Every structure is written in C-alpha cells, then in structure tokens.
Image 1 (tube, rainbow, N blue to C red):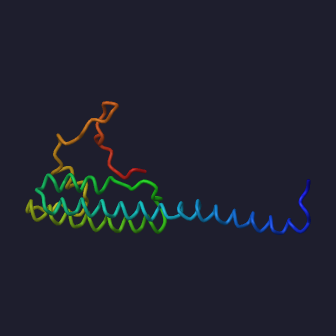
Image 2: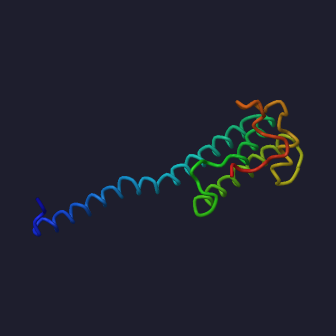
Image 3: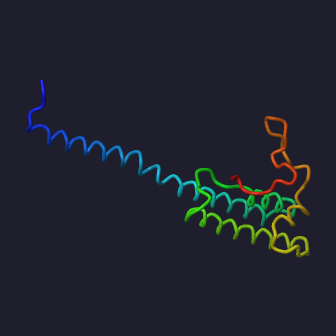
Length: 144
C-alpha cells in the first residue's frame, strides 16, 4: 500500500513541522546553557567578593584564590560569554585586593598571586579522592 500523490505534500509538511519542533526543543535550550552557566559563575564571584570584604585577610586570600582559579563549566574560554565572565572576575579580584590592602596596610600591587602567596593559609588545602592536594604547588590558573 503506497501513499497517494495527494498525501505526499501533507506528509512533507508534517515532517518539516516535526523537524522544526525537535530543533526548538533540543537546539534552542542547548544554546542557552552557556549564558546560564555564565550567570552562575558571575553569581559565584559575587559570593566570593562578599565573603572577602566581610572576613579577615586569610578569608579574603582564600576567596581571591578561588576567584582567580574558578571557571564555570560549559562556558567557552573565548567569545562574548568569556569576556563577560572575565570582566566580572577582574572586578571581583580588584575589590578583594583593595580589601586586603585595607586590612594589611600593605600594597603588593595588583597581581593576585602576590597576595595569595603572602596571605593564603597554607593549611587550607584539602585532599582529593586520589590523595593529592587540590591546589598543587606552582599550579595557578583557570580550569582550562
């Protein structure tokens, strides 16, 4: 039993509608994941900034380290979303360093690593499941 020639255009239109529906349900939400994770990353930076400006210098150093090392998952390292996140991170880092200057009375400059090296509590590393520390000595950077 074959399809009549009258039914073929109807089936074609139904197939196109089904394909469009699948594209809207699958592709469009996937394109929205990056901005969602970027917003989450910016919110995390704000939490770190708030903890740093209300805590002592060790707390500020811990939050500064977290702010400089964290990169939100599913956010590309290039493009508009990366620029948004980097600008937010730069602002949070500046404010945390400003707080650390105020608390310490010192000016170690704008390089966050100098502040981390000086004030990060050395006993705050936590073992990971494989028995190694989370922040290996000499490895500083983003989650790339």
